[in-house]
Structure formats: structure tokens, C-alpha cells
Image (cartoon, rainbow, N blue to C red; front, side, top):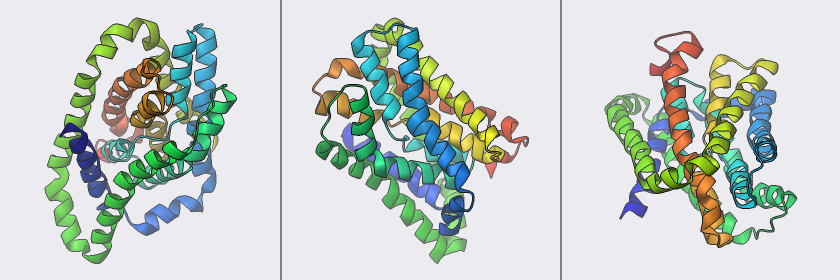
Length: 282
């Protein structure tokens, strides 16, 4: 039952995001490709590099190092698009980054892990990525379709679903904390500092890179959200389902908790970062 509730909840959130997004907005991310490419570079290259550096600096065990590398090479989390919406960030950019990283993950994850000395087959991983992409893409397209076909009704539906969507998102966050409470208690000292450092450094790297490429504040916030929220579900699947080593999934479990704290902080800080108390409500 619980296994079916989470995908349904994620699909519902993506549908509400789609109600606020048009195809022209999504295509508009290509008008300034340097912003999109820099965001993808931070997430797909910067995070793995940070994970490797952190593992060396903290002299982590081989298992924790491997687990940290796996969560670092995973695509963006599906909830990142809804978090971007709540924070007042550029939802179109966030969605474009999620779609790109999810689609290419079947190739990039085995490639990056091979650099770390881990051989991984891509067949099972591609199947998992396709499922996760479908949970995100199909409801998103459905929401965009409703907006394009009946914009007036889409606006009414958007307002009607706003509070239920926030409740669903809060439920996902609380469920993540509850499901991972054992891992958090048992392994916080061993892997916790590395996970927190990876997450925090990734967000700071995203914001710094955004300044270099002169991204707007909304774009910078979107890149920060996408970098901070990884797809922990895929990481856990790789550790337990593909590699058959559930013990190395500890960093991914902890990251699932830490990134939700980061998400709440970014949502709270969104209006301040955007310079408008009303920014997060648009």
C-alpha cells in the first residue's frame, strides 16, 4: 500500500506543477543555454567531485565512500520541481534539469561509478529511471495540457489544489523522516557529517556558479534546489537492488532526510533570496 502511495503523491504534485507551466516556458530555458548547462554541470559533475573530495578529507570507510558517490551521481529528485514552485524559483528551469538528468541517468550513473571503480549494468537502472521519469513527466504533461486547453479552468483548479498539494508535500517529508529514523539514529555519526557537508557544499556551489554565469535570482534558486535534492530512491535501488549491498545505502537514506531539511530551508529563504515577500506565492 505504502509503495503505491508515494508514486501517486509524487504524480499529484507534478500535476499541480504542470498547471503552472507552459510549453513555451519550458522551451524558454534553451534561450539562455549557459544557465541550463551550468546547472547541469554543477549537479552531474560538481556533486560527484565534491563527494570524492569529502570522502578523502574525512577519510571515510570504503562502504560510506561508495554510498556517498552513488547518491552524488543520481539525478534530481522529483519533488525538486514542487520545492522550486514553493520557493518562488524558476520552475521551468527546475523541470528541464530534472527531465535531462533523469533521461541521461541510465548512461551517466554507470559511467561515473565506473570511474570510482564500480562496475554496474545499465539495463536494470534504465528501467528504474524510465519508471521514475514516467511518474514525473506524464502528470506534468497532463497538467500542462489542461492549462493549454482550458486556461481559465486550469487557474481555478490550481487554486483549488494548492492547499492539498502542500499537505501532500508535508506528508512526504514527514514520511521520509519516519521511514529513515533507524538509519539516522544508527549511522548519523559515521556518515552524517559527510552527507550534510555534501548537501550544503552542493547548494553553495550551485549558488556560486549561478553568480558566475549571471543567472537571475529565480534561476539561481532553481539550480540550488535541483542540486540539493537528489533522487535518493534511485540511489537506494542501486545499492540494494543492483549491487546487492544494502549496507552501502546508508548515505542515501541519510541524504533523503537531510535534503528535505534543505528543501524546507530553501522554501523559507526563497522570498528573502528573491527580494520579495510575495515571490514564493507566485
